[in-house]
Image 1 (cartoon, rainbow, N blue to C red):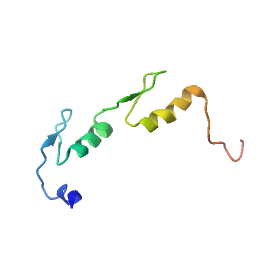
Image 2 (spheres, helix red, strand yellow):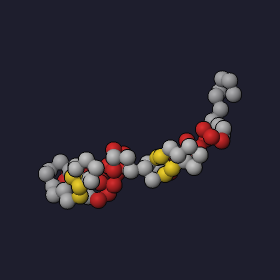
Image 3 (tube, one colour):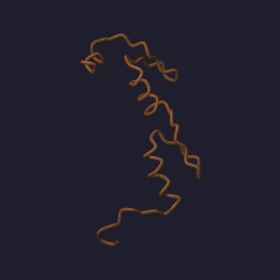
Image 4 (cartoon, rainbow, N blue to C red):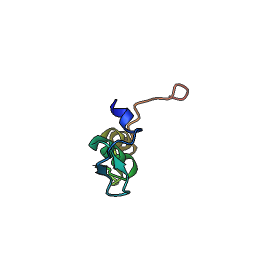
Length: 76
């Protein structure tokens, strides 16, 4: 039912300050900002690259540590 509101012209009181797009719920605006408008609160302490999600930062940090938890089945 909540999803249907996104298609039925529901009231959209939450506006993105970056692009001006309106959203029916605060969580939809937050998701939009993180994915589309560069709200990236997780920063790599080594190179400064910024990420939307903490998990993405953890994966990226392997670049600096050399940690390779997944081995190739062919070459090891």
